[in-house]
Image 1: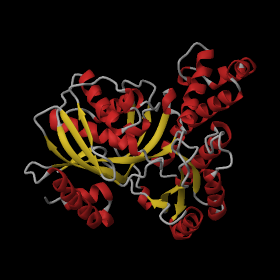
Image 2: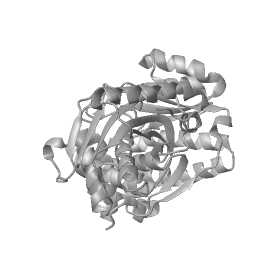
Image 3: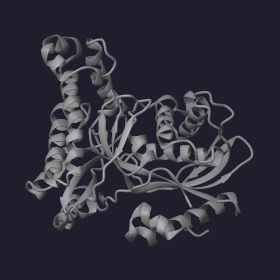
Length: 414
């Protein structure tokens, strides 16, 4: 089957069209090798995301800036008449899930099968249709990269259900909410809503989660490609094993501060309230919880300033704010290495070496959840090769990714 080149150009950038065309053709061939030739093949894609502003603010109903990127999960899909969803992901065993049974399965926790069942349950719970299908998927969203490979997979499954069973009428926002539900409840990982929302909605956006049932999403009209800077994500090759307690502690500790004031999330209190009662809060919640709360207030406010800077085409002000966010995360959020493994500090090494190379130009910060994984750098175009070479010398070949900002979220490829 032929893939429209103009569609590929929009999703991945003009320079990637040839590669992506071959990638889709190879995926179709792999599908047919597994499931046989089909006349009614359909193609889907859901992107990874990069967090640009607001680090660990979404789970306390804060504000974030994020963007969908050109790295994605794609699926070759054929609908079925029964209630069985079969998904063969490249490099992994096939998942076969009968979605007529939507009970939570403890033995499925932390598996892709749980995400399939969880998304199906989310669709049913919200009054939408589900249906069986066979799919072959392949991904170039690095697992554990901070680009949210799991969110992309969840959004992909939701996008498939939307188009196959609901005429494509389930909104991008609702798909993101269902995807988060699947990850929280069925997969068993606590997470905010930013990853799924950025993947599902697409583009370069701000999201205000004050009302999580109706998050306010605004697109930012800014041609970053013409800014003179390149967005790079560096994989520091950190070990993500058993980091769930580290991630879970952040929202738990932030919310403990809110609960001191009789609220559920930090969005419902002010920094001034915390400062006025700081001695009592320290005693009740601990110093790290208080430090993380201060981070929330500062980074939440910073998102608005970052958005304004881009809307005003003030790239220097934007980069200064990104650097402030990175420093704030390091000192107060404290998510650049795991306390249980202080000997492993790849993020710290990456941040330090980036600052040495950039010498005050551009900006660098921890990216995504932190503790292990990736850093984000805004690198002057004329320094990209030097920067990339230095990062790959430190972390290995292929560790520095130059990202394309994708204007489309989860979608069917027409």
